[in-house]
Length: 222
Image (cartoon, rainbow, N blue to C red; front, side, top):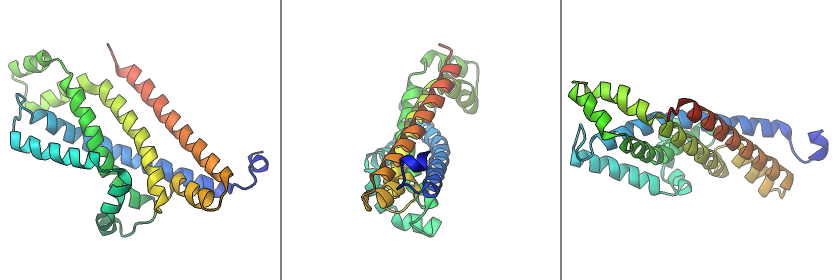
């Protein structure tokens, strides 16, 4: 049916490209979630008045986050070419996009984590400290559970942004639906391929948002 409606689309390539986009998005979201939480916790804990107050360390982490959050993604990919080649061995393929995807998205998510932690009632943290709770206990039993709905909402937004990043990465040979739309669609003036790639990216985004909304509603007890 689809082959009759869209005869200029090579569906084998579409399936491969879709799998590459899902792969890049999944791996980068997991890595971004972990790295972003670590950076966000450090930003929060080393800020003035918090447990690990350290102005110098906080400034260094904040500078790292601000710099990499501000660089346009397509420029970041180019800047990271030597680093990517060193750890992956190539600038082509889905794996080659992962370093730029993670380094580009983790600082963005770290700021969301920091904001989520700042919104926690200070009284809850002080109560845990007054009962002699260790820092690790405060992190695992207070900070993360209290901010979990906001953390899930944040990673949902970040995951959607990462889908867009994978499309940009595809333009310079990282594979995925962006690469398909550019090489098979734009360069060959094949609007059918571009349309299919766009629709599939939209479907992936809608699925991510749907899952994120469901998880957030389940864990939000307010």
